[in-house]
Every structure is written in C-alpha cells, then in structure tokens.
Image 1 (tube, one colour):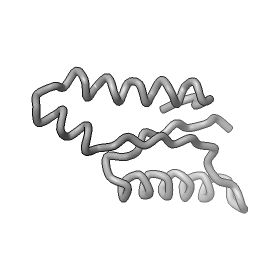
Image 2: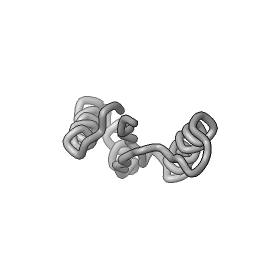
Image 3: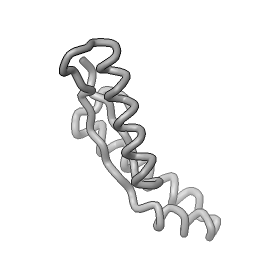
Length: 79
C-alpha cells in the first residue's frame, strides 16, 4: 500500500473529515481492520489567510509547497 500525504490545517474539521473519508474508503475496499497508510501535516490557516488578505499569494503558496516537500521527505508516495 502506498503512503498518502495529507496537508491539513485549512480547518481542523476538514482535516479530520479527509482522514475519516480516506480510511473509510480503504476499509470499504479492503475490509477487515485495514486503514490508510498516511502522514498528515497541518498548517496554521490563520497565517495563510493573513498572507492571502495582504495579497502575498507567493508566500502563502510557499508555505503549502514546503508542507508538501516535508510530507515527501517523511515518506509520502503521493499528496
């Protein structure tokens, strides 16, 4: 099974929902006690939102790109 990288933090509620839905899909497909192999990294959305409001989209994007790179270094096969 491949390891899924999840970038969370846009809201903790959505992060929990992505995690739940991913694991429900794996359980439905494989059955039993199977769950998704995953790594989640959460960002502080307050920081992202402040950068967006200031029109500093490149910096907001850089934070998300850094999160993706960290997940890859941690062993995620896909994001």
